[in-house]
Image (cartoon, rainbow, N blue to C red; front, side, top):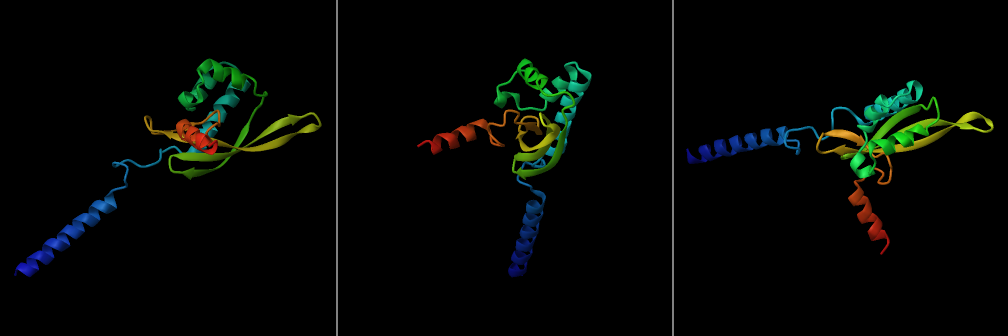
Length: 163
């Protein structure tokens, strides 16, 4: 009788534990990654910049600025506007696939640059993004200094390599 009770109790505890483990994703009940993926954020960012270059005005550029991690880039809106003002007219970016590593992503991008020899040539690159823990959204590392790492992580690696 006691043995059967212990078996039932043990099986009930194991069942409850299995249910808890299956329902837990390790993030306190929220999904680990933002709903909008890094590719969509990158596309929206460059669409805003292209619109600003095509139509003029600062409104789309200000929307693009909201998608960058301005704190880690140490850029204010005026500095950002000055940078994108130098982009050529008709500036367009093709957004490729993202490689996601935890809260960091690298999105493949291609853009064309005019050539003095006639046709434009394609430049292939990558744009780093990080998940902003406060807003739970992907933010673009516009300066690219950290390549997907937070600035303090990058500086720690940099200082270790100089020893």
